[in-house]
Image (cartoon, rainbow, N blue to C red; front, side):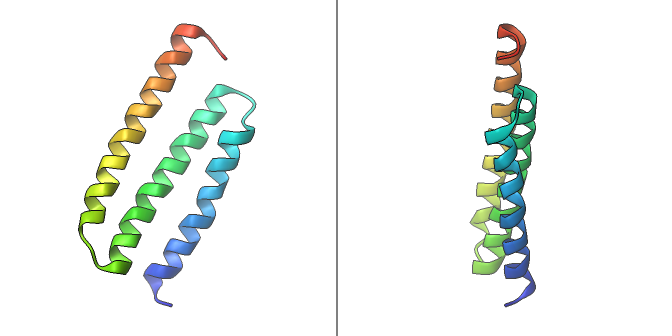
Length: 86
């Protein structure tokens, strides 16, 4: 097992904390924070997977997922702002 694979396992384990926050968050803001944490871990995991399998297109996948995660966070924040705390 090389360093890239070990780092990928660590990032996958840490992403569980974001999912727990999304599922158990008592408020919408906690769930948004969990979504942001999980999405950042997925971006790091995509880059690490690209390093492990030696494919550079995974960097493009990570960039696209980062933009989609940012847009998702903005959409949730605007929804909460307009509708109030759900």
